[in-house]
Image 1 (cartoon, one colour):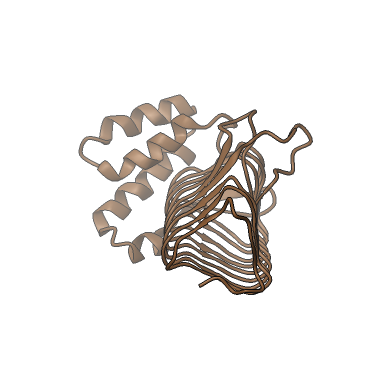
Image 2 (cartoon, one colour):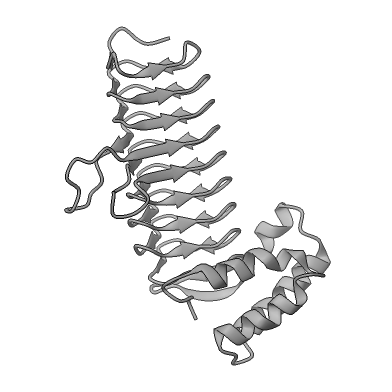
Length: 256
């Protein structure tokens, strides 16, 4: 399943049920899992681990050295899960020793053309990155988040689960779980109601999340006070947990 025109290092491990197209370059310490399909002209550097049933389209650059002037050739890694679609000209870098040393992409993500995922980023599962969305180094993106076309995320920022970042928006602070952010700089616009409906959230859950948004953004509370209010409701409203976690775990503050 490896095209004779591809260049594959003897130190790479390609599953016998994976495929590598013509003119690909697969470097040392690359592992490609069963059912993964690498289209022509893809370059993959290691150490990189790619799971099962992914599809990586032509001209993507996967696992290249991080774009960080501090990088000095350390053996950092990239780990990609299962069933991801990675479209043309996407770039995903390995990690740096100044952080965890690994960049991670979970499962079932839809990564469109020209997306950039920088060193040490952690991306969950079931996300959508529209064309040319970009993450700077050390950014985290939660499950089911959506990044609109040409949107940008500053280094060390966190995009919470089920959040939505609008087209051409950029953020320099965290976007809490469930929140829609648009503009430059990005500002909160409400709860991602349409996305949550598609994922099966009930009317009661949506009402609870709307009220939680008002607690954070409309009642003039300090962030710590808002977290306390939400935490008191979380036992009966489990859907608040991702929001509370995203409010607690950031280091750059939240968009306001």
